Amino acid sequence: MSGISEKIEAEGFAIVPAAQTRDLLGGLSDWDLFADSWNDLGVDGFMADGGRYRRRRFAAFAAGADGTIARKPHQPHYQSRDYNALNGGVQRWFEPVTQGVAEHPVTQGVLKAGLALFQPLTADPPAGASSDWHVELHQFRIEAHDGEAGLPTPEGAHRDGVDWVIVMLVERHNVASGVTDIFDPDGRALGSFTLTEPGDAVFLDDHRVLHGVTAISPLEAGQEARRDVLVVTFRRED
Image (cartoon, rainbow, N blue to C red):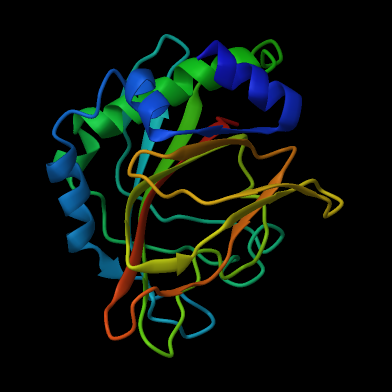
């Protein structure tokens, strides 16, 4: 945990290979059941570019400074157009993450690890302000076919408008490209890498860096390509 914190403090992001993710989460218990849930995601109907290449589910949680985590009632996902010029500015209602996935050991491990990691890196709130966190969890599948690329970040390099972000690869099947690029706010490139193994992850300081992922296409023609990721964001409650 300390090594990840040091990298984030120094560079604004930390790449965590799958083996280290397993250590961080105390193992990847029942991973196959967790990963299989990505086969039950609905098409994202809010794509302003008209794309049908993204599937997703969504959930929100409250996380306390004492380490408690509780699921919130289902709600829309909202980003201002300042952070998402393509799809922002509207309340987007997605199908909820199933309770089985929300309670799964891998999901809970990621939520708890994020809270334990980010809380010490975050300045104490002003007197009287909340020290709790609003946490959003997204299951994403990006699909591509011959002649039809899939866009993991159709809005381009961006911030999410939160405090901290975790992106963890769940599966990568028949995918060419899908390179993650990290930039500073002035657009200077800070890093470029590809999440390839299930459990590979990147932890991001959303105030300090922008992130984007290049379009994916099938590595082997005639077969579907898909890239499944779990994205979890942490924002101090107002």
